[in-house]
Image (cartoon, rainbow, N blue to C red; front, top):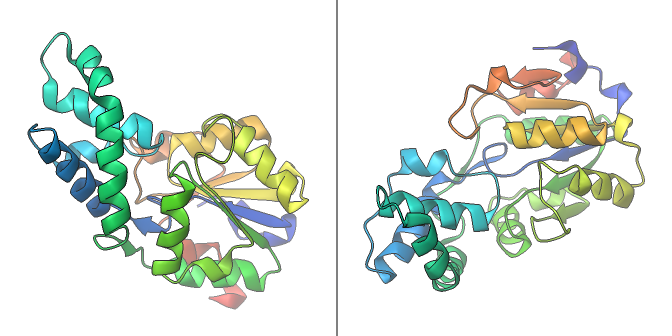
Length: 234
């Protein structure tokens, strides 16, 4: 673990990712996608495959799942695109119905958020998940009270790994990127942070597109958000 995460006096705020960072939502994704696939008379996709698709927004997730179950058909991509609108409507229907029912807050998240707040940092949640999914999930898991702002993947013109969402979130918080810590679980978060000029710490337990997270260019890694707390608060 790099010492940057312990020196919270360097920061005025923290931007925290949601899926794979605070909440293990793989069960929600699997339930919603497979109900969507049932509606389209397509085979199910296994959770292990879904885990590699998570993190780039619902559009990417839905399209990837469709291509996965249609493979090795050479025209799978085109067929997935043709089905996309119907699939997206069914996915949103099912996700809103089960949001939070098959997910759980990771150990250490509550303690980590409390420590960040106790250190005087302002907090924002920034996720590629649609805002209409993210806000109810935070409420359901008792996490909403930690955050002044919540921005989903539809809040800005572009999603992470583009730096725009981080820059816009810093602007909304009234903080500078250099004094705003990004806390995430994947290369998407790290790339966005690097491009925006935000220091970045990644958790080791989340979804990083099936790749080892410690291979990502980040300022530090933690096995639990509780590790972000200064020693005096742990």
